Length: 202
Image 1: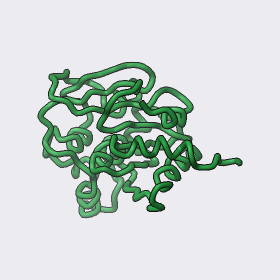
Image 2: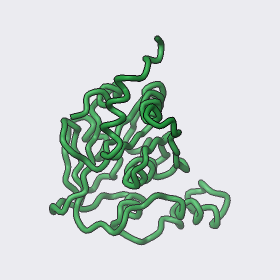
Image 3: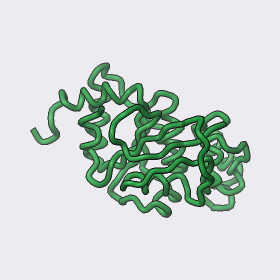
């Protein structure tokens, strides 16, 4: 049971992501919307969700969102859009479902949080406490909740993202919040370190 990590969030609870062999439902909501709803108390078991980029990132399809990103005018040209897509962290082909629930203890694959910058800073400091190694942040300002903070942490990394247009538009988390994803293997050490590092304003 984590004690200090959940206290970093000002609103709602951390969200537990578990990849499971159970059979879930096809959701009409986007992955980031489901995560936000779970943050405030709902639980889901989904086979699929409604975001085309999320489907690509979460292993539901090999259909690249390159055309979508190119037509959205977020990049200078098709080559830039292709590079952005190739840079996304992705999961292998998914056969089962994703369980998305508020965290109240127990195991998880990834724990998702939405933190103000000072709280995210403390999380980073707790990560670096044991070894001094800095956090390697990987983000292009796209696919923040699904790629930066779910697929990337599944590689054993701490994911921190300023968000993306899609997740901020559809799930409406605060302009003052960063998205964070913590893999299970790092969570215990980070939680312990939060009790050892000095407070910000000491």
